[in-house]
Image (tube, rainbow, N blue to C red; front, side, top):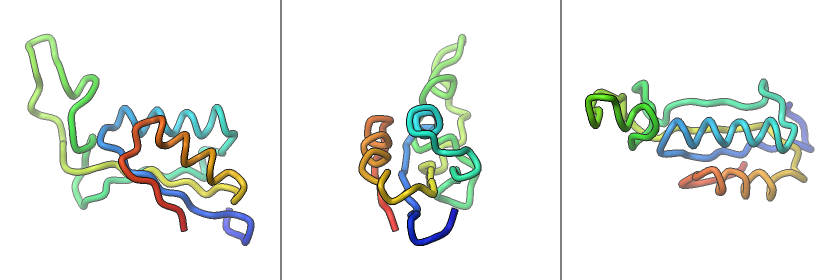
Length: 102
């Protein structure tokens, strides 16, 4: 989706849980197609985020310390320019620590 009526919006998340929630909101609430959504680590390392959550935070034996906490998770999406404000708000509600568009 790369033409003059589209833009790329990016958001950084501290947990995989928040990134997954944001992706589901983009698809289910805003109708953005999954092929237009991209997820990657902000570092060269594999990561589940910069802080533990969900299954990364606890285990039946107590707190876990084996999660790959190697950096934040970037979610980006190619969206119509008229969706910028609603997608920014949706990313924020999902827990984004920073949202940018280009």
